[in-house]
Length: 256
Image (tube, rainbow, N blue to C red; front, top):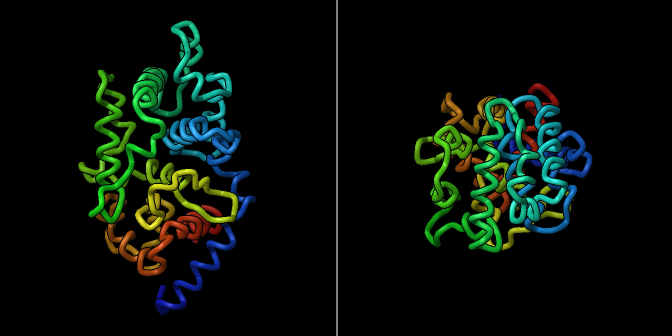
């Protein structure tokens, strides 16, 4: 797609305005954490929802709601206070390759984390010299798996150190960090700058980004994400990940 830099920015800004509005929520997994108002409930509902956010979107929403229902619609209270008997409600949960074994470990790990930290935000804080959150995700992952875990579960938390674009974690981070008045993203984490966010890179956003000349690399991996990071920061250095709405909308809704 041969257009000038200014035309590209104008085009993408127009698409951001088109999709970054409350109507977007009705067909997006973010509707699951939107049910809650308490910060820790939002964090936990959002983290679980993002974790299973692959495959059919209707299926993601259905299964994420199923999991929240199994938690008695009180995510933080369930994570922190559920008895062994209560936890049986998780048995049988499955979303594609994420099953009840993984879910039970996530519960244990989150209980461990919230017994030490007031918010998941603390674990994702970048160091002063870090321009993105790739290393933050790796540090979070170390804490998440600091207690004994099933080997099978490790694949469900992406590892940028192994070249992963960590699409689902970056989506979770967008939800928590981005702050605007449009009513989609939560913006409840105030100590991480939106300028450090990365776009959730998947098949749809990757294909659109390539057609627009924002990525040359063929694989949707960390190297491609860093290339996209660089180009989106040129378009808007303060809020580069607002363009996720444009790339996603063009790919999913417009089949661009």
